[in-house]
Length: 244
Ligand SMILES: C[S@@+](CC[C@H](N)C(=O)[O-])C[C@H]1O[C@@H](n2cnc3c(N)ncnc32)[C@H](O)[C@@H]1O
Image 1 (cartoon, rainbow, N blue to C red):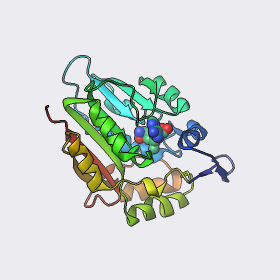
Image 2: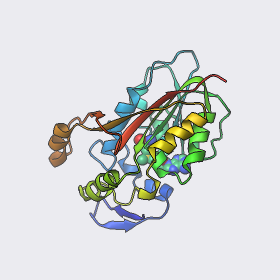
Image 3: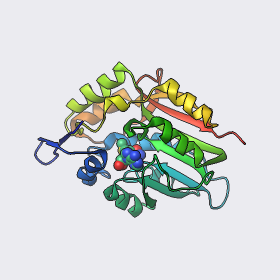
Image 4: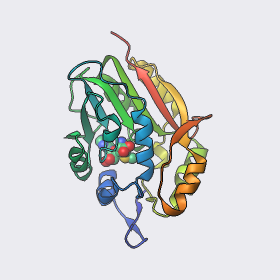
């Protein structure tokens, strides 16, 4: 998957690996009308699952933090917000929004066991080539009693249809940002988390349809992420790490 929409010319460019793709789109992170608009909506929904920090010095680790879009949604919650990402251009923007940046791979986190009160994995699991290792690492750095929050795309035909075939026809949506082969098998995800001591509950989510319909022509206004009856496209996961 290598095609990308060039937002200046409207043409599709060929860009290589995941980091190069995000570097290419670096100017889009903080544009609410831009290529990452939906990430803004998802970050708000993700932030709503994060509680206030339960202790001074609490650490929230944001895996694949991108430009740090979660930051405004947890500002004042009392966490040190640490973001791990491979794209330096994204990390620079995350830092400008108060995130402590770590350039690294979520498959080899340069962080100690049990250091995090909260681990967030927003729209990252569908980008990793090794789901088992990503989940193991996310759960490893979480302390017992700590919270794992994630959202991602399900490994289903309907998710591939909506997130790729349909979404990539919407003007301004980058092409080739998703590899459908990496979409996440929900049963496997739940099994991996359970094996790592984190019983995970899933719930389906989707953008509010009336708000999305109003947003599309002018790319302005608020689009809330609301619960959906099914986890078959986009879903959130939430789980507390068991003691011992
Ligand atoms: C879809 S974006 C999500 C960004 C952010 N979590 C959000 O929701 O706004 C995926 C991010 O994951 C990063 N990424 C992809 N694979 C990665 C890996 N193996 N390790 C670290 N970051 C990775 C990309 O650079 C990109 O910033």
